[in-house]
Each structure stands twice: as C-alpha cells, then as structure tokens.
Image (cartoon, rainbow, N blue to C red):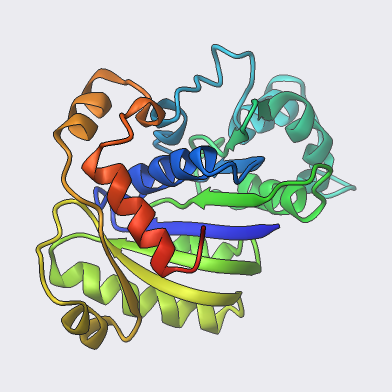
Length: 254
C-alpha cells in the first residue's frame, strides 16, 4: 500500500490532479484505491462523480455533529476520535468498484479541525481493507501538516500556480513536514494548468525539489468542472490526462 498526498495553494489545481491521477490508476488497473477528501470545500467527490450525501454517506464532521451535538454524546472518557472510527467506516465510507471515498467535511464546531482530523488519522492507522493506494487531497494552506493526518507518506505532490507565493509554499511545506516528523520518501513539485512553460531546472532551483512537469491545459477540464461532470469521463486523448501519465511516469509509477 502506498500513501500519496496532494497539497498546494487554493486554486492551484491539486484536486483536479487527484481526480486525473485516479483516472490514470483506473485505466492502468492500479486499484483498489482509497480517496480521502481532507479539504472542507469537498470538491473531490464531484470531480470523481460521487455525491456522498446522495449515496447515503456522511462526512466525518457530520458524524461528529450527529454523535456529540444532536445525540448528546459525551467527550469524557474514551477520546472522541477513537469512538468515531467504527462509525467512519460504517457511515462515512463510500465503497466503489475501483475506489472508496471519504471526506472530512466542513468544521463541525467553531474552531479548528482537530477532532475530525484526529478521527481520520485513527481510522487510517487501522485500515481494515487492503488498498493499493491511499490518496489524500489536502486543504489549502499549511496548518493541516501540523495535525499530521498521517505520519507515514510515500509521495507528496505540491501543485503550484504561477506565483512567487506558490514557490514559497513548497519550501515552507517541506520544512514543516520535516519539523513535525512526517516520514515521506519523495517530495515532488507539479505545475498546475496555469503554470508557465519554464524549465524544470528553474523550478528545481527555486524550490529545491524535483519537478515532474505541468498539467496541460485542457478546455474540457474547465467545462467538466463548471458543469459538475466527473473528470473520470474525460476522453483518453485529453491533454490534461496525457500529461498526468507523463508526470507519474517521471515519479516512477506505471
């Protein structure tokens, strides 16, 4: 089982990257996968054609509300995160033919995402199913790194946009991941579809990390996202999809 994490600034294209990566793994028969939407905007489900509510599933935050606010559950005694694990697998996990999907969802109370993230971390550490890949779509920003949804990661993909802040994001993300002792094997940089055609050497000089290339611009991706259509239905000739295949080949994936 390999753990992969996609991160980046808001609007960089990290969720599209995860959806296109999912399509690639389906096409190459590299499944089953577990997709984890840790972004409160919850765009990943739509991009892979899954509406959790429509399928009868709830986000981790919704399960927290149901357990501790609506039903009067207590947070005294057994840690709330541990009490949630079984419920996450029972009510929060969509199970599909090629991938399963779960989402953290919006904040369950005023404040941080500490409890939902802790519940997710506990569930991921006690996987009851055998996945070939676990792919986490992280929220924008860097505070989630400190909460360490998982401390063991194979590959981190930082998707960047055409801005100095995006280059700085890579450096900070790498430093924080090291400081909080997240064990990862590879830290890669991927250009979003708005990223300019500049040399890989220049990107690596400015980020100090390996650059895998950029996601090609594809009008169909924009149209699919606007209409809420799954990116899994993109044609095999899609420039964005073909670029993902090349990106993952550079990262050593089939």
